[in-house]
Image 1 (cartoon, one colour):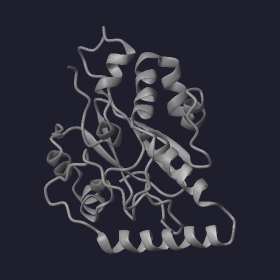
Image 2 (cartoon, rainbow, N blue to C red):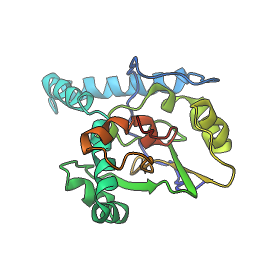
Image 3 (tube, rainbow, N blue to C red):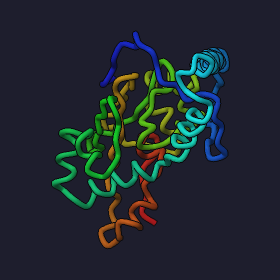
Image 4 (cartoon, one colour):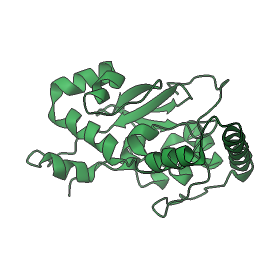
Length: 222
């Protein structure tokens, strides 16, 4: 497994959100105890900060609304630019933080690494401790990404987990699992499907899904 880092730090959690688009995969198990603890901790911290006058309830609400407004389309914008602009792709792989700033996307202090899929390598991202995720690019993580089942199994048996998402890879492809941390996030740059050469950027954006930027699925030509 590549990209593994120790988790001796505080995490920016996004627990307690449920979205209809989040589909469970076979064997998925909830990790309610861990998620519930951080929900209560976050709530207590928020109430304390409001009580002390450090922030206001309106500021908290505005921050939540701004975060909820982020969708995977931002990540898709990055992928499409890399697919259609070779020079941009080079910059993205060398310095992802600066490259996405060119598109008006700011990761803040968090480091971003873009892992490129190739005919020989397929990349998958995970956070083995909780739910560290490139939210500035993809929005809130899907529920299955936070579950213990995915977090533990994708490290031990990535091919089996990918198969449950409908992704079966030839045995000669190297599957690399990247473990996110509070300071470091990953984004998968999927390969552009054959048969899309004549498609516009808007059409290409339609086939770049959240799950293929996590690495559990592949983009497909319409």
